[in-house]
Image (cartoon, rainbow, N blue to C red; front, side, top):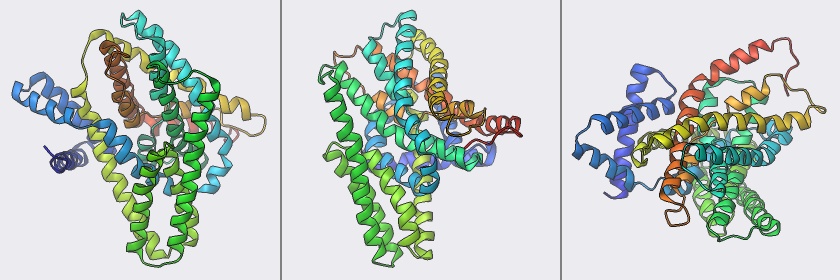
Length: 422
């Protein structure tokens, strides 16, 4: 089956599942597609004939989820998400976002990694500590795809939306770098010195941000010198595809480059380089790209159940780690509140909202599937990490995603009369 056949099957399934969800269940489109795909996959595994199961397993296994998400979808989704973030609002929340996306992520990585070591040990799986830290790194970043898709439907206050959105856009780039460092240490291909790790962070993160600014400005200049919406949309497409591949070839953070470029085009470009006609067509185009890729990505997450090797020990550990990840997230998001509470006022419900709103998604699954399959990571340990990742992601999207709106509404309602968070 070639790439066109695979795309045809995925788009057809996404369209059919989206139609079923819209007519029967009325869930948010991405979540509805994921749950329908997951339920049908489970039914096929339990009750389908051998030939049907083998065909479905072969189809899903043939899809390189990591390659599809990290090197194809992510660039488009991050750029589309950053296009609609107001730079002024982000600047007001810059310290909260910066602490959450850096120190908060590192704290969560350490807490999840340490706790998961003992959970895996207790359940008889015995995953090495360094690989547990890798699990902490891949599960700690909040997924901008999942977060942005659901926040559109929730209607949270602007300052809170900026905090959650800003963190999700920036911390996945940082999280991928932490993941790469820890995997390098675990397989013995990286130095464990502060200098080497700091250099990698500086090159990947700083270089990605700088590249995003440069290519974003170049695209902004081109947009400013013409008035033809077809060509201008083509320029943004070139910015995303070419810019992301350029970052990869220079070993810079492609996700951060796309976020910075998207912020520049969505703010300076939108205000000073586009006509009303261009703005309208550009918004519609990228919104459509965002919705289509979201639907396909969430469908893929539901279908990835076929690549799991099921065991009672791994399933039990994964259920426990759902709680571990939530508790670690709560501790990590408390950091900016503790650090900044003397300089600004926060709503008392902010920690709980940020904790429950920190959704995990396709990036975590992609990084888990990219774990090495050689002797550096035993097959049982790899499957335990993959199972735990999958369970946390499904819980995050299905449970946290579906309950995020009522949880936020209830917490904000309780705080009426309390100081407004900023």
